[in-house]
Length: 263
Image 1 (tube, rainbow, N blue to C red):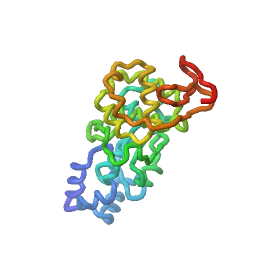
Image 2 (tube, one colour):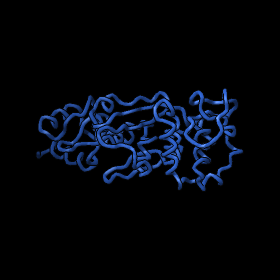
Image 3 (cartoon, rainbow, N blue to C red):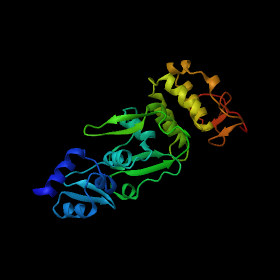
Image 4 (cartoon, rainbow, N blue to C red):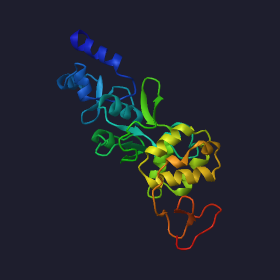
């Protein structure tokens, strides 16, 4: 394609990372308005992946390329976390990926996942949770994952584990969380400390430390629990399980320890 239209598509392709989605407002910001987008579709430069979202012709963007658009172009506070983050960082190699996998995304309360992302067939189930787990601290415990042509925000392992625990037992099982914690031998005490102090969920904080102590991780000794608010009263994951007297929470009886009747 030659002429002004060709020049525009060439400029666009230079700033548009391969493997990612582009949303219409971003295209318009870069001089490619809707009428021109339609022309590019006709000439096979672009193809739609959903209403107002496009891929370069020949590209087969994965969900990470869609998340890139959500973060970099739409500026929405949504990131990959939980088990998905742990899988991406190599901490959950025994968990299924492939076409039966689940993509775990997290956002702030009130932030909606774009319809085009939810409706597109990424080859995996998308699970999105808008939580106040770290209220007022949207970027707390997040890091960047370099994927070559682009990068995305994901949870650091410390936050990812807490996000897993947020979904126990409704989404993920206690046993699965325990297995994940076993592999987290190199968590950073300072990051754990900061997240525990800012975490809004009593259940998550109690489970996190209970599992970490049961795994006898060396970094546990460097966490100052006196600065963490573990709340008051008892918590129960399952009835008839094992009551942990230190963290006052009843968990499935999968580990050695006393079972307290009526806890």
